[in-house]
Length: 242
Length: 219
Image (cartoon, rainbow over all chains, first blue to last red):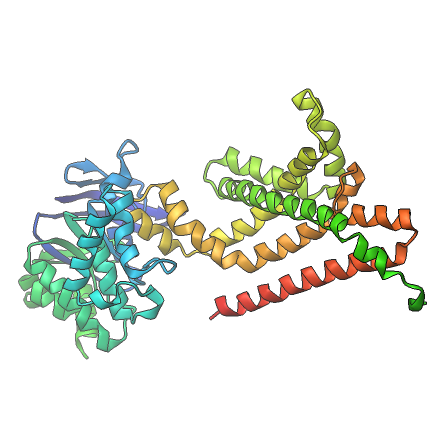
């Protein structure tokens, strides 16, 4: 479904992505980890074209993301994305956050968008907050709304960019639970996270990145159990200590 | 000195002054709407990746901000009829002048407003499949407008005061009508004092309500 071939990206003279290649099959859950500044976020933002790249190719469902002829808005509407800082729209209510793109992009009727939105809010346990503004919700609740907003577009894949990094510890699980459930339903997911517990539970594969390179790209079992490169080992020992 | 004041002149001229004030209000209102609309388009152009567009918008802003308003008013008073090929009347030429002039200032305010919206908001809109114009209309501009509301309203107060410059092209606004009464009845002090009090009360109460609004928004 997602195919990345020899992708490189520079910010000026600084190389953020260095010859990255990987594939994500339909229904697969891939966790991307690595030290900060290793290019994880940039990598997944390249997949829906939020970040341009200079070399290589990315295909999503056999559509080339980097091609200037590609209808990017249309492509993006099929890929859900969840951000580190939620990025709910603060000037409109929770339910309107979920309805907006359904109506503007998919052309759904008001009523249909409302029904779909309420069903998803119900699912993430926030139906009673539909009329509130994002600022009135906790971080964990906001992130669950953001996931519902993405799902409302009936995406074929979901990208998560450190979805729990900005959350207080006690709110992390409520968000991870939603993601675990989603993975269980067979959603294709690419998740940038440091939550190794999540990776152990639901990941099919783990990608480890360092200095813009994909250093490891293997199944979950071999990532956690087999001998790996020195950098991945030292990274894992640091974050698994506590 | 105040004992010799004839306030009856002021009271008698209220309907005439109100007629002038209506023109002042109408001009202010239309110039705000027009200026804000054009200013927002200019701000979007100025922030555009298309170099020509941002250069043109930048030149526009720099040009109008370097011109005294009274010159722009004169200019359009003579220029607009020449372009249109027939007299358009003082009101329309002045309205065009104010709109174009104010747009330069509103552009800079809206530009700051657009830049005050986090990049993540734009990306969230993009990720949902919104096009550039949908993103601007639904996500970025409403937030930019809210963030800048106090400054936009302050600019509106300035515009309200500046409309008194229409006297140079002979339009009968509030100030001009007051002056007509003042010279006709030879009651200059009473009339100009009244004008000052009215401007002061209107602008101050408006400014105070902006400050109140600002406090509510900053929470």
